[in-house]
Image 1: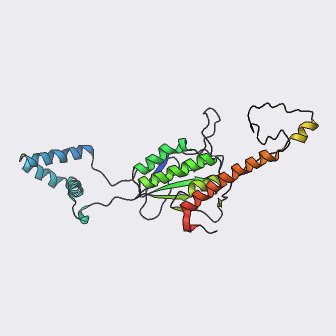
Image 2: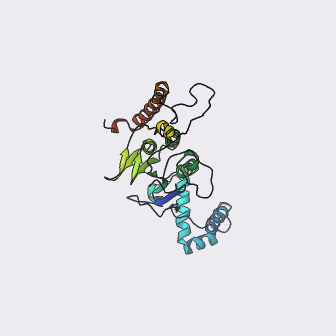
Length: 275
């Protein structure tokens, strides 16, 4: 869950009927079998020789002895010349999996003990790579309790941009444990979301945890000497008694973030939402 580091490596696997996630952190690019470089070079040489009328007999003998080359040549010519469907070899479906796990937060400086988080800068390169290979679909394996509203919004917007740029590539999401708050914000950009009966999904809201320490400080003889310059710089400080004006400002900020969250989810999920 939230303690595991985010995996910023797309996993691509061949799938003819149902999706099967491969081993964590492994990349597979499953494409139709291509001829070896030397073989294709020979094919190009043969084509050139035929064009100028030289080596026709040798070419015929070579192709007769190497049926695989003939098959590859037919496929290449069929693709280039728009041959019949029976002459083309159908490419197996390609699925790219991007694993996201943990808290959503702005990237922090690296170092010993530093924990990776889900952020746009961490996942934008791998998402672009996953869409660039034009797979059948891109799958987000997403497990996150949420976190930064800004990073959630940035990832949501980037996923929508990639979907628009690659309209033939489906974007799916599946979660096993938690896909809540900012996690659901990101997942709502997908075409479909798959979960387990025991998965925790949703929590479309905004929270700002806080405590009051005024009485505790007074009991232990600790005095707050915070200095500020500018209106509302200290805000709703836990070191001071609650100021109704500052509390209301914080509530307005939370309401604004919540309204944006709801609007993005409603726009993305549409009629699939059940209120």
